[in-house]
Image (cartoon, rainbow, N blue to C red):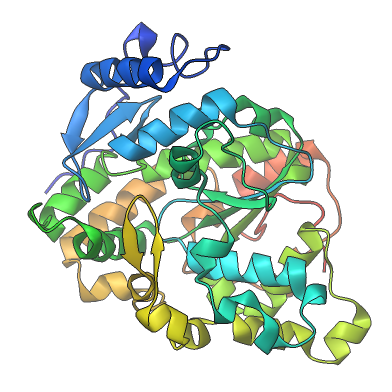
Length: 381
């Protein structure tokens, strides 16, 4: 079984981006919809996992409503310097990090953990997914709360995010576990009339980069390369490292977000309390996440976002040959960035917190060092 190491991205029609998405003009809803339908009809298509179709746009694959949200964001989203954006490929620990980031940044507003809105709201209700929010609020697609989330690629980000100076936390995970988790998730939320996608079909699309929001590897690399250009604006955090030492990385995250834990807070055990509140075990057992629903293009049961929360579950689902192929693609794609290529290798976390290093040094670290966990110089514990 020979793997396809990501075919070259197909060239898109000239009108697909510059003439539509980033056009600097106002349109009424009818004009926008007409142009959108024209664009969709011209784009390459693949079978969707949740909807009927995904479309290739700016080198990545998106479901129809996601693509519409992206185009709205590209036209109307105005980022602010104090915004914080959590970026992730789907099923990379997004729910967990939304809870952590919200709690860290708002901990002084809630004197006791039981006052935290997480007890009554799913993390996805507190930190909006931009491509969903834009569909509902096309003229004002920036949420009022400045912590936001997106799964879209760096190439498709609104220009204002790239130039505003806002901070970006990038969460990533072993792609084998992502594939399995995405496959489970898609088959749970798909419409009843849509046949389920088999694991073999999902693997075939994912491994050649033609899955929703894919290619996964290019998604990671797009943000990694941007982090080398603006190291102080980016923090990379792997799901595996967060599972390995959640308190350590919660402190790093707080430092990067500009809300570091004080010595008094650490002495009082607040870091552990925040981590416990946001843990998979606690969140999955809250009533709101057992029985509640929230809107994400359609009504979604909150419990669907809590399956296992484990590292390495892929081995329980993927045959050995699929595991081997996925590892070979990852090794090839991330061959010059050892941190991205060694998600399962042990790391001495305390030794990599480090002091600030120059951009040139960071570029070298990205090529030769297996122990630099993030490109953010502010994340010093």
